[in-house]
Amino acid sequence: MLHFVATRGGLKQIERTDRPRSQGAKVFLAATATAQLCALARYTILARFLGPEELGLVAMLTLTSQFFQSITDNGSDRFLIQDKDGDTPAVQGLVQALFVSRGAVQAIGLALFAGPIALYFQTPSLQPALIILALAPLIFGFLHLDFRRDQRRADFRSEATVTLVSEILSLIVTAVAAFITRDFTAVLYGLITRSLAYAVTSHVLAKTPYRFSYSKEHAARLARFSVPLMFNGLLLFVGSQGDRVVVANELGISQLGHYTAILMLAYYPASTIMRYMGSMHLPHIAAGRHDNSQRDAASDTMGGQTLILAAGIAMGFALVAPTATVLLFGNSFAQPAIVIAMIGIFQAFRFMRQWPTTVALGISRSEIVLANNIMRMSGLACALFAVRLYGGMVSVTAGFILGELLALITAIALVNRASERRLFHDWDRIALLVIISLLVIGWTTVIEHHGIVRITALAFGTVAALTWLIRREWATIQRALALGIGVIRKT
Image 1 (spheres, rainbow, N blue to C red):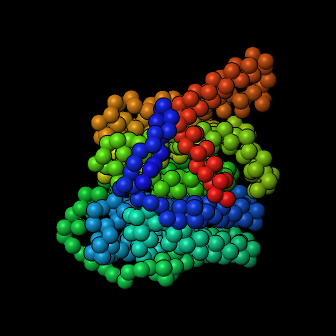
Image 2: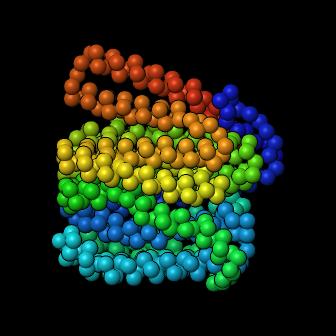
Image 3: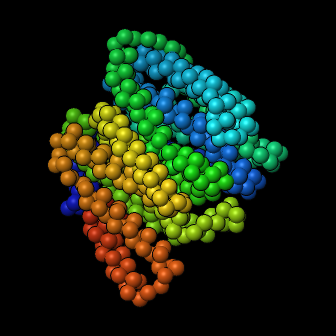
């Protein structure tokens, strides 16, 4: 079959016989987008009904749940996609047994630490809520993983269905609960409903019997794949959720409510694209792990797409979010433009890391993901130092942006080394994102401090940066245009 890959010189047509053919990709994208819209709608409804203080408590519940999810994440479901025997009942049974165990451990952790967590944040009402929340991971542990096995053949239809059913039901239940309860416990009903719907729908759509099994040979391979990711869990939580922990500790629960509401505006759209791109590109990168040209072509295509979208997140969020925050959540959630712009840039760098970490998983180098998240912890130290020295959300966010930047540099360097490429290969993409981010900050400050010299310099810099971006990723843009024209012609 003929396939187009992006190169610096333009589109290159090659013949590819071993590339998995995607099935249900459009449905999966629609389902992923719907899921993130539902999640954003949940936060919008909760913000409107509850206000910043109660929304801060909602964020504390979800933060605690995500902590236990992160420290127990062993990547076993992705092992079904990546492993050579992942399509066999023995491997699937092993992974499903591990999934149930993981759900039980999360539930026990939530129940045991509910009291100390409530005491630490001086919020007694958190204790019973966390104990009830333990039902969500316990139920989710009984997920049938047939839809992950389907993805070995780039078939995403079953996961799309599971996602749509669970997220829509969760949104409906959350909205009803928020209207009735008018407090933060409304989120519990939605989270438990989502887990139940996920588990039930996955069993209804499964093509193979649900079973548990154990094989010493398969378990050894799973352990080699999973152990780095398990150690990675705590680091992943600190890197992905540490900003909200710092905001809660240093600025208070109410400010956490403000910060979370704004962050969600960037997080959910970006997560939609991240999840879709990771799912789409991982099978192709994994299929080329023994073919350098195929692997590098798949990696370069993903890198170009990721940079363009990350730049769009940074610029688009600064333009849209100040108005959207007030329209969606109300005047009580309004924040200065610079705060909103910094949060958007933070999410853009988070998004950019999806590229090297997906490549690392595709070439079976999960230790690179671990190293990446170790480096992300530097952002925690930077944020704590900055907020205690200067105070405010801008300082916290700046510290975490620096951590994401260092983690991105580390991941790309390690992937280049593992792929036997030059150490500085693709670092111009990092430089481009940094320059665009600085320009976004510059334009934000111009709103408050006008000056013809400053505006002229920013305009010149913006044109130069966008020209560089277009030239650098012209092959990727061509490919996107070719695909778009093809879709239009078909319709």
